[in-house]
Image (cartoon, rainbow, N blue to C red; front, side, top):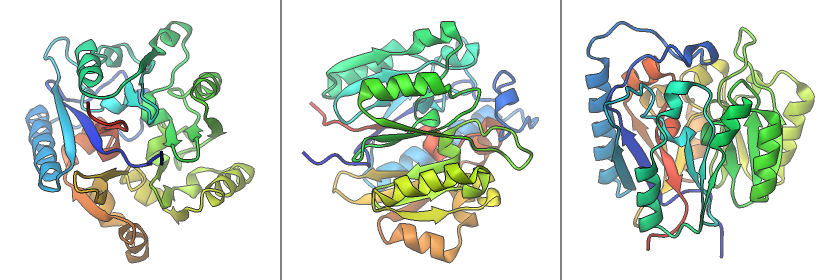
Length: 306
Protein backbone atom coordinates (compact mmCIF):
# COMPACT_ATOMS: atom_id res chain seq x y z
CA UNK A 1 0.00 0.00 0.00
CA UNK A 2 1.26 3.45 -0.93
CA UNK A 3 2.23 5.57 2.07
CA UNK A 4 0.89 9.12 1.82
CA UNK A 5 2.72 12.15 3.17
CA UNK A 6 -0.50 14.14 3.55
CA UNK A 7 -2.96 13.12 6.28
CA UNK A 8 -6.62 12.69 5.36
CA UNK A 9 -7.95 13.76 8.77
CA UNK A 10 -6.85 16.44 11.23
CA UNK A 11 -7.40 16.79 14.96
CA UNK A 12 -7.48 20.15 16.73
CA UNK A 13 -8.13 21.42 20.26
CA UNK A 14 -10.34 24.44 20.89
CA UNK A 15 -8.59 26.48 23.58
CA UNK A 16 -10.31 27.31 26.86
CA UNK A 17 -7.61 29.53 28.38
CA UNK A 18 -5.38 30.74 25.56
CA UNK A 19 -2.75 33.31 26.46
CA UNK A 20 0.91 34.13 26.74
CA UNK A 21 2.80 31.25 28.35
CA UNK A 22 5.71 32.52 30.48
CA UNK A 23 6.97 28.95 31.06
CA UNK A 24 7.71 28.43 27.36
CA UNK A 25 8.90 31.94 26.50
CA UNK A 26 12.56 31.26 27.37
CA UNK A 27 12.86 28.76 24.53
CA UNK A 28 10.44 30.33 22.02
CA UNK A 29 11.47 33.71 20.67
CA UNK A 30 8.37 33.79 18.45
CA UNK A 31 6.09 34.48 21.42
CA UNK A 32 5.03 38.04 22.25
CA UNK A 33 3.71 39.08 25.65
CA UNK A 34 1.04 41.40 24.32
CA UNK A 35 -1.36 42.84 26.88
CA UNK A 36 -4.81 42.14 25.49
CA UNK A 37 -7.69 41.20 27.81
CA UNK A 38 -9.58 39.83 24.78
CA UNK A 39 -6.81 37.49 23.57
CA UNK A 40 -8.52 34.29 24.74
CA UNK A 41 -11.78 35.33 23.07
CA UNK A 42 -10.00 36.36 19.87
CA UNK A 43 -8.10 33.06 19.77
CA UNK A 44 -11.34 31.09 20.05
CA UNK A 45 -12.87 33.17 17.26
CA UNK A 46 -9.83 32.56 15.03
CA UNK A 47 -10.03 28.87 15.84
CA UNK A 48 -13.73 28.69 14.93
CA UNK A 49 -13.15 30.51 11.65
CA UNK A 50 -10.36 28.08 10.81
CA UNK A 51 -12.66 25.10 11.44
CA UNK A 52 -15.32 26.67 9.21
CA UNK A 53 -12.77 27.17 6.43
CA UNK A 54 -11.55 23.57 6.68
CA UNK A 55 -15.15 22.34 6.48
CA UNK A 56 -15.76 24.53 3.42
CA UNK A 57 -12.89 22.72 1.69
CA UNK A 58 -14.20 19.29 2.82
CA UNK A 59 -11.15 18.70 4.99
CA UNK A 60 -12.11 16.30 7.76
CA UNK A 61 -11.23 17.55 11.22
CA UNK A 62 -11.94 16.25 14.73
CA UNK A 63 -12.38 19.04 17.26
CA UNK A 64 -11.64 18.40 20.92
CA UNK A 65 -12.46 20.91 23.64
CA UNK A 66 -9.82 21.95 26.14
CA UNK A 67 -10.89 21.94 29.79
CA UNK A 68 -10.80 25.31 31.60
CA UNK A 69 -8.93 23.92 34.60
CA UNK A 70 -6.06 23.83 35.01
CA UNK A 71 -5.42 26.71 32.58
CA UNK A 72 -3.43 25.54 29.58
CA UNK A 73 -2.39 28.57 27.49
CA UNK A 74 -0.92 26.43 24.67
CA UNK A 75 -3.61 23.75 24.39
CA UNK A 76 -4.36 24.99 20.87
CA UNK A 77 -1.06 23.34 19.77
CA UNK A 78 -1.82 19.59 20.30
CA UNK A 79 0.66 18.36 17.69
CA UNK A 80 3.38 18.71 20.35
CA UNK A 81 2.07 15.91 22.55
CA UNK A 82 0.20 13.57 20.20
CA UNK A 83 0.96 12.18 16.74
CA UNK A 84 -0.38 9.46 14.45
CA UNK A 85 1.78 7.32 12.17
CA UNK A 86 0.77 5.66 8.86
CA UNK A 87 1.39 2.17 10.31
CA UNK A 88 -1.28 2.67 12.98
CA UNK A 89 0.84 3.84 15.90
CA UNK A 90 -0.38 6.68 18.10
CA UNK A 91 2.43 8.37 20.01
CA UNK A 92 2.48 10.50 23.16
CA UNK A 93 5.50 12.76 23.57
CA UNK A 94 7.41 14.37 26.47
CA UNK A 95 6.94 18.11 26.90
CA UNK A 96 9.40 20.64 28.25
CA UNK A 97 7.30 22.73 30.64
CA UNK A 98 4.93 21.55 33.41
CA UNK A 99 1.90 23.54 32.24
CA UNK A 100 2.16 21.99 28.77
CA UNK A 101 2.24 18.48 30.22
CA UNK A 102 -1.29 19.13 31.48
CA UNK A 103 -2.43 19.18 27.84
CA UNK A 104 -2.18 15.40 27.49
CA UNK A 105 -5.72 14.08 27.58
CA UNK A 106 -6.55 10.38 27.64
CA UNK A 107 -10.09 11.06 26.43
CA UNK A 108 -8.68 12.47 23.18
CA UNK A 109 -6.48 9.39 22.79
CA UNK A 110 -9.39 7.03 23.47
CA UNK A 111 -11.59 8.78 20.92
CA UNK A 112 -9.00 8.40 18.17
CA UNK A 113 -8.47 4.73 19.12
CA UNK A 114 -12.21 4.09 18.95
CA UNK A 115 -12.79 5.79 15.60
CA UNK A 116 -9.59 4.97 13.67
CA UNK A 117 -7.43 1.91 12.99
CA UNK A 118 -4.88 2.43 15.75
CA UNK A 119 -2.97 -0.75 16.56
CA UNK A 120 -0.57 0.52 19.21
CA UNK A 121 -0.16 3.46 21.56
CA UNK A 122 3.44 4.34 22.45
CA UNK A 123 3.92 6.67 25.41
CA UNK A 124 7.28 8.43 25.57
CA UNK A 125 6.13 10.99 28.15
CA UNK A 126 8.09 9.28 30.96
CA UNK A 127 11.28 10.65 29.41
CA UNK A 128 10.29 13.96 31.01
CA UNK A 129 11.60 12.47 34.27
CA UNK A 130 15.06 12.27 32.65
CA UNK A 131 14.81 15.78 31.14
CA UNK A 132 14.77 14.27 27.65
CA UNK A 133 12.25 16.14 25.52
CA UNK A 134 10.87 15.65 22.01
CA UNK A 135 7.74 17.70 21.39
CA UNK A 136 5.88 15.68 18.80
CA UNK A 137 5.64 16.90 15.24
CA UNK A 138 6.94 20.25 16.40
CA UNK A 139 10.31 18.61 17.07
CA UNK A 140 10.01 15.90 14.41
CA UNK A 141 9.23 16.59 10.76
CA UNK A 142 8.42 13.19 9.26
CA UNK A 143 8.90 12.14 5.66
CA UNK A 144 6.61 9.13 5.76
CA UNK A 145 7.04 7.67 2.24
CA UNK A 146 10.84 7.68 2.59
CA UNK A 147 10.97 6.82 6.31
CA UNK A 148 13.07 9.83 7.30
CA UNK A 149 12.59 12.17 10.23
CA UNK A 150 14.22 15.59 10.50
CA UNK A 151 14.98 17.28 13.82
CA UNK A 152 16.51 20.66 14.66
CA UNK A 153 18.11 20.29 18.07
CA UNK A 154 16.98 22.67 20.83
CA UNK A 155 15.93 22.58 24.50
CA UNK A 156 12.71 20.98 23.23
CA UNK A 157 14.38 18.41 20.95
CA UNK A 158 16.89 16.05 22.54
CA UNK A 159 19.28 14.31 20.13
CA UNK A 160 19.52 11.02 22.02
CA UNK A 161 15.75 10.69 22.35
CA UNK A 162 15.20 11.58 18.69
CA UNK A 163 17.54 8.75 17.71
CA UNK A 164 15.76 6.36 20.09
CA UNK A 165 12.30 7.21 18.76
CA UNK A 166 13.43 7.06 15.14
CA UNK A 167 14.98 3.62 15.64
CA UNK A 168 11.83 2.26 17.29
CA UNK A 169 9.66 3.60 14.48
CA UNK A 170 12.00 2.37 11.74
CA UNK A 171 12.90 5.85 10.46
CA UNK A 172 16.27 7.39 9.63
CA UNK A 173 16.96 10.38 11.90
CA UNK A 174 18.55 13.44 10.29
CA UNK A 175 19.69 15.91 12.96
CA UNK A 176 20.84 19.49 12.49
CA UNK A 177 21.09 22.86 14.23
CA UNK A 178 18.94 25.86 13.30
CA UNK A 179 19.30 29.32 14.81
CA UNK A 180 17.49 32.64 14.88
CA UNK A 181 19.28 35.69 13.52
CA UNK A 182 20.64 36.40 17.01
CA UNK A 183 21.97 32.82 17.17
CA UNK A 184 19.43 31.28 19.53
CA UNK A 185 18.25 27.71 18.83
CA UNK A 186 14.92 27.72 17.01
CA UNK A 187 12.49 26.03 19.33
CA UNK A 188 10.81 23.63 16.87
CA UNK A 189 11.81 21.99 13.61
CA UNK A 190 8.41 22.61 12.03
CA UNK A 191 9.06 26.36 12.16
CA UNK A 192 12.22 25.88 10.08
CA UNK A 193 10.87 23.39 7.54
CA UNK A 194 7.88 21.46 6.21
CA UNK A 195 7.63 18.48 3.88
CA UNK A 196 4.80 17.98 1.39
CA UNK A 197 4.38 15.23 -1.19
CA UNK A 198 6.37 17.00 -3.90
CA UNK A 199 8.22 19.86 -2.20
CA UNK A 200 10.15 20.88 0.89
CA UNK A 201 9.99 24.37 2.40
CA UNK A 202 13.05 25.25 4.49
CA UNK A 203 14.92 28.27 5.84
CA UNK A 204 18.47 27.33 4.86
CA UNK A 205 19.77 30.64 6.26
CA UNK A 206 18.91 29.38 9.74
CA UNK A 207 21.26 26.40 9.27
CA UNK A 208 24.66 28.04 9.54
CA UNK A 209 26.67 24.84 9.26
CA UNK A 210 27.32 24.30 5.54
CA UNK A 211 27.97 20.59 6.03
CA UNK A 212 24.53 20.23 7.59
CA UNK A 213 22.99 22.26 4.76
CA UNK A 214 24.58 19.91 2.23
CA UNK A 215 23.40 16.89 4.21
CA UNK A 216 19.81 18.16 4.15
CA UNK A 217 19.85 19.06 0.46
CA UNK A 218 21.29 15.65 -0.36
CA UNK A 219 18.52 13.95 1.63
CA UNK A 220 15.85 16.03 -0.09
CA UNK A 221 17.37 15.26 -3.49
CA UNK A 222 17.02 11.53 -2.87
CA UNK A 223 13.28 12.00 -2.34
CA UNK A 224 12.77 13.87 -5.65
CA UNK A 225 11.18 16.87 -3.96
CA UNK A 226 11.59 20.47 -5.04
CA UNK A 227 13.30 22.63 -2.43
CA UNK A 228 11.62 25.97 -1.75
CA UNK A 229 14.07 28.09 0.26
CA UNK A 230 12.58 30.80 2.46
CA UNK A 231 14.27 33.77 4.14
CA UNK A 232 14.55 34.60 7.83
CA UNK A 233 11.80 37.20 7.38
CA UNK A 234 9.52 34.60 5.85
CA UNK A 235 10.34 32.05 8.55
CA UNK A 236 9.59 34.54 11.34
CA UNK A 237 6.21 35.00 9.67
CA UNK A 238 5.72 31.20 9.75
CA UNK A 239 6.14 30.46 6.04
CA UNK A 240 7.91 27.25 7.02
CA UNK A 241 5.06 26.18 9.30
CA UNK A 242 2.65 24.64 6.81
CA UNK A 243 0.92 21.32 6.26
CA UNK A 244 -0.29 19.49 3.17
CA UNK A 245 -3.62 17.67 3.66
CA UNK A 246 -5.98 15.58 1.55
CA UNK A 247 -9.71 16.27 1.67
CA UNK A 248 -12.69 13.90 1.42
CA UNK A 249 -12.66 14.14 -2.38
CA UNK A 250 -8.98 13.22 -2.62
CA UNK A 251 -7.90 16.81 -3.39
CA UNK A 252 -4.67 18.17 -1.92
CA UNK A 253 -4.33 21.47 -0.08
CA UNK A 254 -1.55 23.34 1.68
CA UNK A 255 -2.58 25.01 4.94
CA UNK A 256 -0.65 28.03 6.19
CA UNK A 257 -1.37 31.32 7.92
CA UNK A 258 -2.33 34.55 6.20
CA UNK A 259 0.84 36.20 7.51
CA UNK A 260 2.93 33.39 6.03
CA UNK A 261 1.05 33.57 2.73
CA UNK A 262 1.57 37.33 2.51
CA UNK A 263 5.37 36.93 2.64
CA UNK A 264 5.60 34.33 -0.15
CA UNK A 265 7.13 35.39 -3.44
CA UNK A 266 5.26 34.59 -6.69
CA UNK A 267 7.74 31.87 -7.63
CA UNK A 268 7.47 30.21 -4.21
CA UNK A 269 3.69 30.28 -4.27
CA UNK A 270 3.66 28.95 -7.82
CA UNK A 271 5.89 26.03 -6.83
CA UNK A 272 3.47 25.08 -4.06
CA UNK A 273 0.24 25.65 -5.96
CA UNK A 274 1.37 23.46 -8.87
CA UNK A 275 1.01 20.53 -6.49
CA UNK A 276 -1.83 21.62 -4.21
CA UNK A 277 -4.14 24.59 -3.71
CA UNK A 278 -2.92 26.93 -0.98
CA UNK A 279 -5.34 27.97 1.77
CA UNK A 280 -4.29 31.01 3.86
CA UNK A 281 -5.84 31.17 7.34
CA UNK A 282 -6.09 34.27 9.54
CA UNK A 283 -4.82 33.54 13.06
CA UNK A 284 -2.94 36.73 14.12
CA UNK A 285 -3.67 36.46 17.85
CA UNK A 286 -2.65 32.82 18.07
CA UNK A 287 0.54 33.47 16.11
CA UNK A 288 1.70 36.61 17.86
CA UNK A 289 0.96 35.60 21.45
CA UNK A 290 1.28 31.82 21.21
CA UNK A 291 4.37 31.82 19.02
CA UNK A 292 3.03 29.03 16.82
CA UNK A 293 1.10 28.89 13.58
CA UNK A 294 -1.18 26.69 11.49
CA UNK A 295 1.01 23.56 11.45
CA UNK A 296 1.33 23.76 15.23
CA UNK A 297 -2.46 23.81 15.59
CA UNK A 298 -3.16 20.60 13.71
CA UNK A 299 -2.30 16.98 14.22
CA UNK A 300 -2.61 14.64 11.28
CA UNK A 301 -4.32 11.24 11.38
CA UNK A 302 -2.71 9.02 8.76
CA UNK A 303 -4.90 5.93 9.13
CA UNK A 304 -8.40 5.08 7.94
CA UNK A 305 -11.60 5.51 9.90
CA UNK A 306 -13.19 2.31 11.21
